Image (cartoon, rainbow, N blue to C red; front, side, top):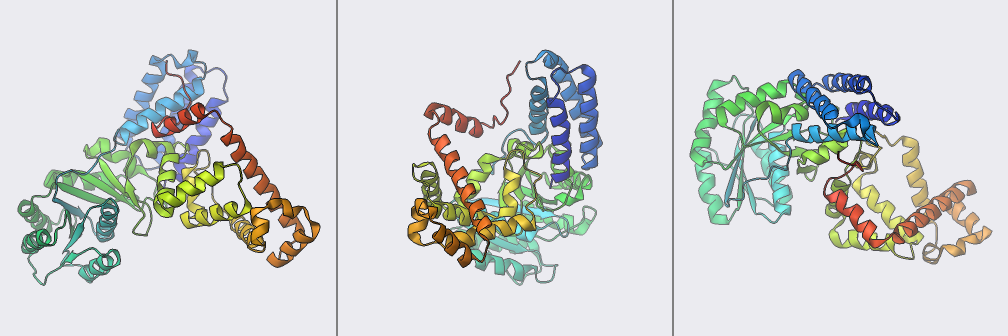
Length: 448
């Protein structure tokens, strides 16, 4: 998602930043190109029009033309406006416990898997979630929810009743008995014009009185997603949205149109097929990704989640310590593979549209083969690799030419020097840099 838009915007801002002096015409031309890029990404025309008007007013009003870094100032203004369009601040779930969450949406939006992902997310946060199977129409929907619940060791409340409000009522009682802190209701997919099913979910909502009513929206719907959200919101008074399939080829218009068009915050985003591919929706981080500035904070959080806090801290300490060995390099490589090499690029500044090719995948495998062909002593003491005999033996063991080994060694030495340079950084400067990341200040731009 957003790859095409991010690539277009990156080119526009790159051209803008190269200009030492900006004129009102330069800014107007750039904004016209931004408008075209947003419309091509299926963002609502009205929202694009308003966004461009606000950016232009801010550019002229803040005397960008006289700014020391006018190109970067324009980027900063666009970034701020995008954050606002996406919702401004993180929208959290209600803190009431027990918490009832009702999930609704169209057929095929991904409600059942979103129920499971949300349950897994909440369980990881220390909650005791339960799932309620209220989709009595789709074949195997109840069985699918049971399978997902078993995978997560989360209770699933399913009954033979064909009356959805009765199912909800029984689930409320039984979930309280087993100590569930959060109860998630999976409902059947329905069209916004399907009046009987809409009436059914209205009755269910009236009975269970959910603190959260979340609409699950397929991000590939584009502008139509806005119409769907408006209809459901008029009927059920939504408290939030879950965007699914954000890892797909969708243009991204739904994410950029939703909040302003419906005035309902996006609370979560599904970014993959696995149960763990589910995250809170941070407007500032998403705006950063769209503009090709990466998302370092989310990358660190994902690494800590996937690898574990202790292992992550140990890996970071080893990297910034005085003795970064090839064994440490192997550990980092394996952890990066665990995170998913192809997915790492979207989190990194300046390379959000970067694709890892088959050749590059092979290079990573070659590096791993070379390291695994070394003895433990050689990995821990790279000075031993000055021996020509050792280099030839390792290359032969990995099934690679000596030139591949020499290329690997050069990479390792470059990385080691980089870590040494970071380690020598003034601690106060390093702390300020990390703090700026946490504050979302991803651009070094002076405010006028």
